[in-house]
Length: 173
Image 1 (cartoon, rainbow, N blue to C red):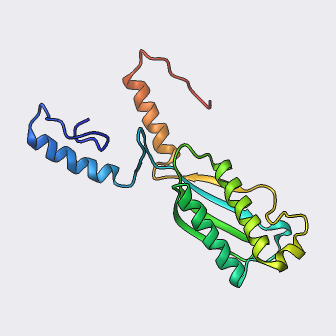
Image 2 (cartoon, one colour):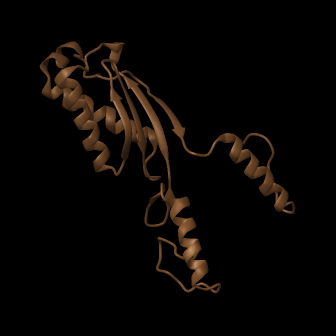
Image 3 (spheres, rainbow, N blue to C red):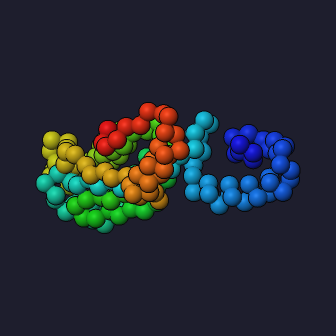
């Protein structure tokens, strides 16, 4: 691939004009992707989790500290926060994460560390959540992206037509 961000520019057999046009296309197409040492990715998730018994305890200083802790945890694990809201009884987080981190591990770290720190720092939380369970069990997670299911199906249908001699699988996997 000419002009790959993973390597240096290599001479194009089609000349410098091709390199310039290719560079413009590449800049437009790949601008929103993140890069690892051996990967190009765009993994976006919408996460939601709630306080135990949905008690409305995330107010004032507790909510600000919760937001600060979430930011610190995400920064430590190379997670980009695209948007987020700390409500009185739940947290919404829209993030972009690297491929080596699974959604379950991310939520485990976020819920575990924030629960521990918030209960250490705020006496009123220790009294209400005496069993050290600040967050309810479970969470909501959905992936998001700029490619819809319909676009993927159309691409795969067209891809199967171009490569008719290869094995294709129809339906759900």
